[in-house]
Amino acid sequence: MCNEVAEHRTSKHKTCRRYDDVGHAHSLTFTCFNGQPLLSRDRTRHWMIEAIELARTKHGFDIWAYVLMPEHVHLLVYPPDADYSISKILMTLKQPVSKRARLFVTEHAPSFLNRMTDVQPNGKRTVRFWQRGGGYDRNLWSPKHIWETIDYIHRNPIRRELCDHPTEWEWSSARSYEDRANRLLPIGFDTLPDDPRQQR
Image 1 (cartoon, rainbow, N blue to C red):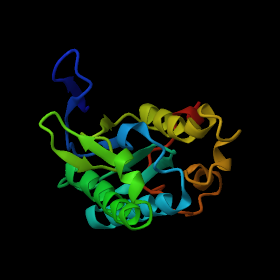
Image 2: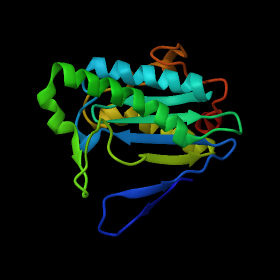
Image 3: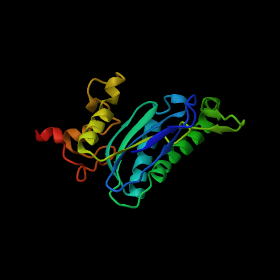
Image 4: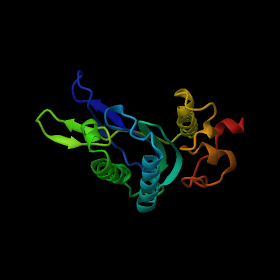
């Protein structure tokens, strides 16, 4: 399991130890800079979907669930091969969106760059789309916890009152679970463990 260790008790920043263990799924969460709703427009959401598909193809993992929220992303992935790196997967997921967003804002809304500028303690200024740090990464291997995580991911829009039912939120894998059809992204149903709640 990924251990997030606080550098200082009073600091908000954490370091994340990632464990690339064979047979483990990974529940990933990454947040927009300063929690801003930078994923609130369809244009940016499509960039995110394209980045997820790029990462899936490049790194060879299965997608088990996802949801794009206005200011963060939840993604449950399963790398079937022994040789993988969650850090590299996250880089491929996040960098293309950051690059496209910076280029778009620079060209079409330069005044918005101030809201994306991170001034570090040493005075260095960096334009960011994503919050500094690696985000959240939790290893999962129990079918029970995997299916609980899928439910949690799909219910995110309901908790935020963005919709009344998971399948009403377009930017989620919930609809694919309803009819097993590939929509925005292909879901790896073939490698997904059976839901133990259905076996009672």
